Structures are given as structure tokens and as C-alpha cells.
Length: 173
Length: 179
Image 1 (cartoon, chains in turn yellow, red):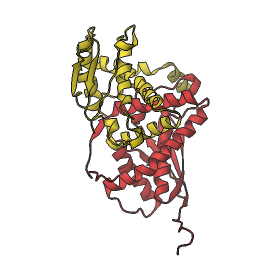
Image 2: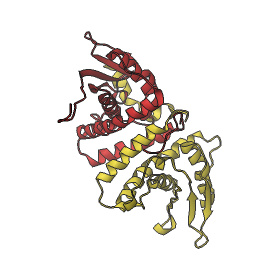
Image 3: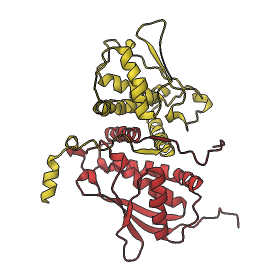
Image 4: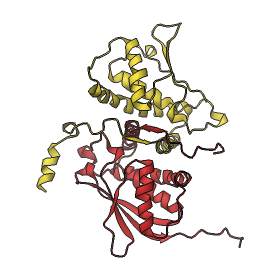
């Protein structure tokens, strides 16, 4: 009983960062979990765009929490203030931490200076998802888009206008 | 389903991505349901759905034969199953006198990285999905079991302990009209 009182004063932030990013799980474990998430979300929405939104919200939750983890691991933490550099950071470091590879390409749109496209040819989340023909615009990589959005929001890169922060996700079968 | 899976496809994903995805799911469930008890049930149900499919993946990768008794099943569950899917091996302990109940003690739980339970949700069994997975997987091999949490590190205990109790052996039912 006495140790319980002592433990109640300790919070998660007092303990050292438990994982050093070395713990890995099987791809199929993750695929099973993600498919349950998609099924659960699918059962609670009435349209495809709502499903994308739900997946994106879950992604934001995850992406936001990656900020602290990555900052703590940087040897010389430097905060990016320019959008391009920040997006490059996402493409390289964030992707590498989460997916063990860098995102394939980062391009700026010719039409507008503040629109960027981040390409990912084989998103891990879509690997075991098969899309029925009548819902061909379903893309569960909305979750990954949510991760990026959460990360950007948390690092104060939300602009005053919604249109300037545009998340586009692509995947190739 | 028609595509042939490579038997040794050992591609891994980051444990952090896994924990954060699971955390996002639990947070969403807590927002959707009012009571912790309902969230626990939903997690168990989702775990069950995962478990019934996970068992096939398990057999595809491990070529494990039939277990002769419950003790062997417990052994395979921890040393092969948990190791394959979560990368951790829990200890089997606290066998009951009749040999139909045992505990799994988890030292390390990849689901609970970065997680702390708030005061308002002390009744939440955060890793309850694991109980559902065990129940679903064992049901597909004709073992009906009851799985529940005894202790949880997130709720202040020293270790995480899951108890598995054997209820009965399921017989494959022959469809009516066939012999």
C-alpha cells in the first residue's frame, strides 16, 4: 500500500524514454490491427469522405505524438522554420523512424508556391487492404496523411487559411 | 487472399508506429463510448476478430503441429505465438491445481509505450485487445477459453498478468443433413 502512494506521484514524464526506437513488430500484426481500425471506423460512418476523415483523425493523434519523440532523439536539435526544410525533415527523418525508409519524392506544385506533394509508392497501411470496385476512391493512406497533418499542426505549421496546408496522398498498386 | 504470401516475409514495422496507432484507436474508443467497461468490451471484440484471422497466419509461418495438452498449448502460445507477433515472450506461471488455468506475465508490452492512464479512466483495460486475440485464436483450434486481466502495470501493479482458463474443447459440428 505504501509503494502505491509513492507511485501515484510519479508520472510518465518522470520515467526515462522507454523505447529507443528499436522495438519492432511483425508487419502482419500491424496489418491486422489496422484492418480492425478500418472496419470499426467503417461501421460508424455513412460516407467515404467521413471514413477518410476518421482515419485522418487517428493519424493526427499519432503524428502529434511523434514530435516529442523525434526532438528528444536529435543530437543537435534544430527547429526548422522554413516550410520546405520542414517537409524535407518529414520526408527523411519522420518517415525513416516510422516506416524504415524515406518517402519517395517531395515536389512543389507549379501552380501554387505553398502546395507540395509528398509521394509514397507503397504505404505500409495499404499493403493488405483490397478496395472493392464500387469504392475505388477509398484510400486508407488517409491515416498517413493524418500523421503528417498532426506533425505539422504540432510544430506550428498551420497557416491561417485552410487551403495553404494541403495534404495529398498518393499510392500506387 | 488469392495472392501467394511469401512464407518468410519478415518485414517489420516500427514498434512506435504500432503503439501510436493502437493509442489513437483506444483514444477514439474512449471518445465514442461513455463507460470504460464498454471500451473494454469493444477492445475484446476487436481482438477476437483479429485472433480468428491471426491463427491462420500463425500456422502459415510456423508449421506448428497439433498440441496434445493444454500445457503444450500454453507453451506454444508464448514461445511461438507471442514471439512471432509481438516480439515478446511472456512467462507462463501460476498454474491451477487442476491444470486448466494459467497466467501469462508480460514484462514488456509494446502496446503501452508512451502510455499513462488518467485518473478518470482507471477502469480501462488498455491492452484488452490481447485477451480478445488469445480467445479468438484458441477458439479456432477448438479450445474455448476465458481470458482476463488480473494485474496491469498501467493501473499501478508491479506486472501485467493475464489469466487464461480452459472452459471446454469444441467439437467441429457436422452440418445438418450430412453424415
